[in-house]
Length: 99
Length: 386
Image 1 (tube, rainbow over the protein chains, first blue to last red):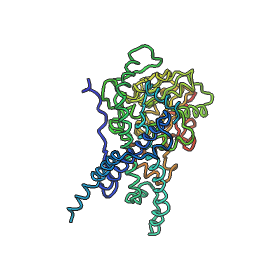
Image 2 (image 1 turned 180 degrees about the vertical axis):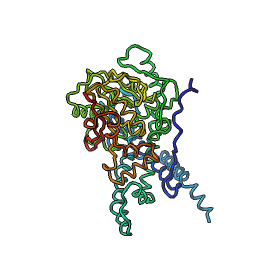
Image 3 (image 1 turned 120 degrees about the vertical axis):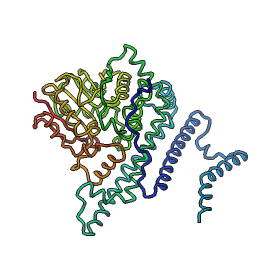
Image 4 (image 1 turned 90 degrees about the vertical axis):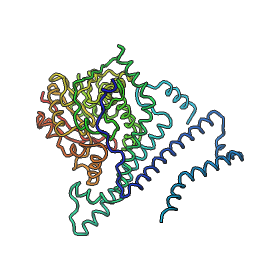
C-alpha cells in the first residue's frame, strides 16, 4: 500500500543563499545552528540543576563552587583541546598551504 | 522550577493526549527558533525599514530620482543591501530550523499518533465523524508547492492513515504565535482565532443564531472547535483538501470531546446541498489558493448559505494600502523564497468585489479590518439576502 501513498508536491530548495559569498552565509547558518544547540544544552543543564536541588542532592551555588579532581580536570582539558583542534585545525592546515 | 510542576509534567509526559507533544530538549529547540524568528521579523526587519526610509530613499532622491512608488521599485533599492540579505538568510534558515526541529518530535511520536487515530476510527465512541474522498483532486498551489516550505507539503503520506503533515504543522503554530508577537501578554487559548471570528460573526450579524456552521480549510481543526464551543446548539462541519490534516483534526476534536463532522473536500466544489449552512467561516485559507479558486470558493459560499446566512473569512492584512512599501517587498520575498505563492496575489485582490461577483448583494458584501490585541486582520465575505 505504501507505494500508492500520495507523494506531495515537488521538494523545494533548502539551500538558497542571499549574500554575495555563499560560503560565509553557510558559516553564519552553521553558527546559528550551533547557538541553538548551546541554548538547548543550557536549558537542559538548568533543568538538571533545578531537579538536583529539589531532590536535595546539591545545594544552591554548589555547582558554581565545584572544583574538579585532578584526573577529572586533566580529562576535561584534553577534551577541550581536542575540540579546538577539530574546529580550527583544518582551517590552519588549509591556510598554511595558501600562497 | 518547583517540585509540583516537575511531578505534574512527568505525569503528563507519561500519558500525552492526541497532538504534538515535544519533550524537554525539543521544546527548548522550538523556543530558540521562535526567538530567532522574532529577532528576524521584528528587530532585523525593523532595521531594514529604518534603513529604507532614512538612508536609501533620501540618497536615491538626492541623486535626482523620484521616490519609489511600488514594491518593484522599492525592491530594486533594497535587494543588494547586506542588511536586507541578512534578513533574507535569517528568515530562510529559521524556516529550515523550524521544520527540522518539529520533525524530531514527530519522528519520535508518529507511530503512537497514527495508532490513536486508528483506534478512534475503528470504534464507535466518536461523537463527530470523518469522511475521506478518493475522488478529490488537490489543486495548485497546494498540489504543486510546499506551502511554508513544509517538507512534503500538506498532503504527502508516509504511511497508512498518516497524520504526519498535520502533526508537523501543529508543532509550528505556537512557535509562530510567539514569533509574530501575537502572544504578547497572556498566552491565548489554542482556539483563540476561532473565538475571535465567532465574535466578529456576532458583531456583523447579531440576529443570526446559526444552526449549521461550515469551517473551510480547517487544517488541524484547532480553531474549528471554537465554533462548537461558542455556538453549542449548532452542528459544525469542517473541510480541508489535505487528508493528513482531516484525519488529525478529527482525532484532535474527539480527544477534546468536541463533536465536529470533518470531510476531505475542495472548498470551491463541495458536495453539500444548496442552503445547507447559516454561517460559513475560514481562517487564513484564501491566501493559499489562487485568483480563480478565490472566486470559486466565494460562489460556493453563496450557494451553500441559507437566506440570511453569513460568510465570514479572515486572512492576512497585507493589502498594499495597509502596509508600507518595505513590508510589501519582504512579503513578495516570501512569495519567491518561503512557500507563499499567492501571498502578493491575494493582497492585490479586492475581496468585496470578489464577493459581489460571486453573487452577494453589493450592500451586503464587505471587506474590512478587525483588531485583536496588537494585530489586525482582513475580514471579508457577505450576508445572503433573507
